[in-house]
Image 1: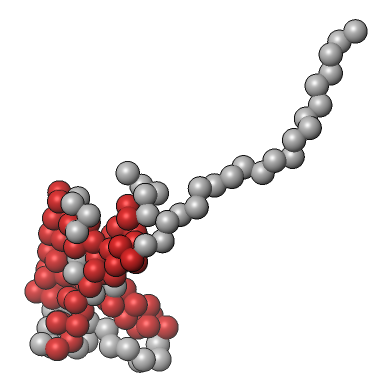
Image 2: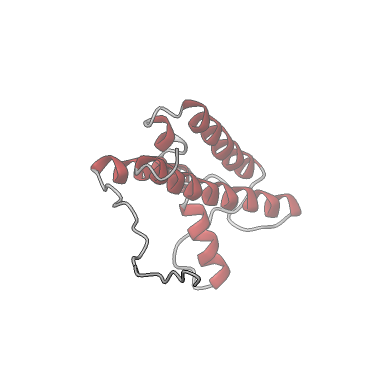
Length: 141
């Protein structure tokens, strides 16, 4: 007679608990404020410096093209999304607002490209901060 095996265990796959330390919270916060710094404080020098150069370079190029730096609470949905993207650049956004860098409105095609560079720099910085968090908790080598 054939032996029939029946599963007897309904065990759920277990996941390891993620350690939440102060460093795990500090790395993405510093990485958001200063682009690339979240990786640099974790001794990921090359990745941190490459991210810093890319984000600062894109932001500076966008400002040089007179891209628009969005303000908060303009009421238009696209302006709100642009503001969130710009705010993602961290300290670069605050410097741009303090020193009034960039254009106030898009009047030429190159200013529209500049606006896109500024927004994408902020979005890349948000992705870099999330990556720094994943490295800090050990989820990513």
